[in-house]
Length: 169
Image (tube, rainbow, N blue to C red; front, side, top):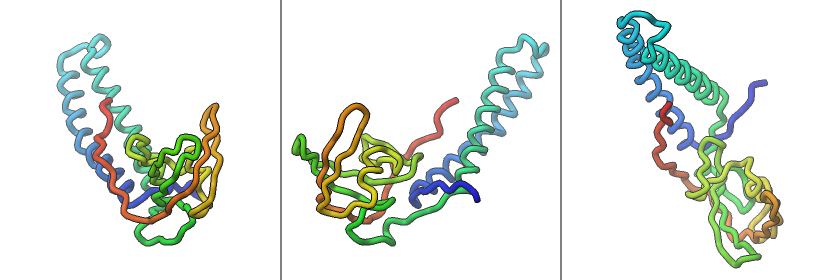
């Protein structure tokens, strides 16, 4: 059985965009390799070796992304409802230790961005919230500390991801 990577529709779209960007960059690197090779002795040609290394890293990233795409399980939160926390949920919580409210959206690993409130379903906070209901109190071990949350609300809505270009190699 293949490994499944859960992600939202926005996560899949971003993955497809990253794949397309890499595919557009690869021919440019091939041209750079050809130009560097034309300069002569390949043993001491830093441009050639740098371009070959970049090509290898991009090819590895492309294989990784295509593998994730082939094994992804797209879960659309707009087609879900209820008060139980599941993948794709937007969860409003009260940190009962600090009286601070937080909103977390539970997403796939590649979609996570803690500063935007997007947490991976594998993160400790998400693991503590998954399966719980609105109104439940949850104790979560985060690193060395324990945090206590009360689930104030659970909703299922479209998740919008910010643009994240393919990291430079």
